[in-house]
Every structure is written in structure tokens, then in C-alpha cells.
Image (cartoon, rainbow, N blue to C red; front, side, top):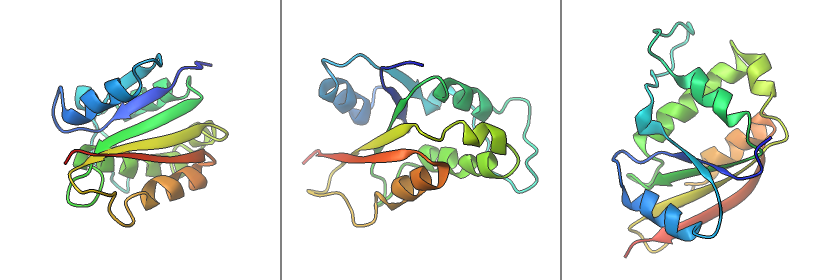
Amino acid sequence: METKPLIILGSNRKNSLTETIIRKALNNTEFDIIDLLDYTIVHYNYDGHYPAADEFDDIVDKILSYQNIIFATPVYWYSMSGIMKVFFDRLTDLITIKKELGRKLKGKTASMIAVGADPAIPDGFETPFKHTAAYLGIQYQGCTYYATK
């Protein structure tokens, strides 16, 4: 099990301000990063049939080898980025058609880094992260918000 944290980066562009802030904030910490832009993640569907190009399972397999997960996303329209939302929607697979895989997340820890232009994190922004973690048996450790203005 990896002891360094795994960053799940959900910015919609490469070399983003969110990535820059993460790297500065974790400057003295060794970490690995999964940039969701580097993967094909198909939108969730109820029948659970995805094209061969879908790489959601590959991401989950990588996550399983880490104890500490940090979700990093810019704030878009008072919510997580679209690419992060697609990833979160796909977590549904881990409680429906891939329950055994989902159960392997239990006991992990997670936190969140958000980057936005408002002086404070929007009301309710953290809710999906807290509740998703609780539902999957992951201990949620809170959010750090970086205001860019």
C-alpha cells in the first residue's frame, strides 16, 4: 500500500491553476497524480455497459493501491468540474455492478482541494465529497480551499 497521497486532478485543462496550486501546496510532500484528462471516462449509464475505450476501471485499480486520496478540482459554477462530476457519477458502478471492487475502498482516507475565484468556498460544495466518502466507507478528512482573488 502506497503511503504517499494520490491526487485525482479534475481540471478541464492541462497545466491548470489548480494543478499549479496543488504542486505549491504539497511542495514538500511526495505524491502521485492521476489527471482525469489523461483518461477516457464514459458517462454513467444504468445498464453498466461501457465501450472498450472506457478507462474508469483502470483508474479505480490505481486508486486501490493508495491509502490517502486527495480530490482536486476547480470550482465551476459553484460545483466540482465537469470531468470530476463524470468520475463521481461513475462511482455508482462500485455500489451496483462492481460491489466487490467498491468494498475495497473501505477504510481509505480522502480529502479535497478546491480552487476558486470567490473569497470562500461555495455553500454545499463539499457535500458530494463528504457523502460519497461516507457511503463508500472512506474517512473524509476535510477540504482546503484556495481563493485565487
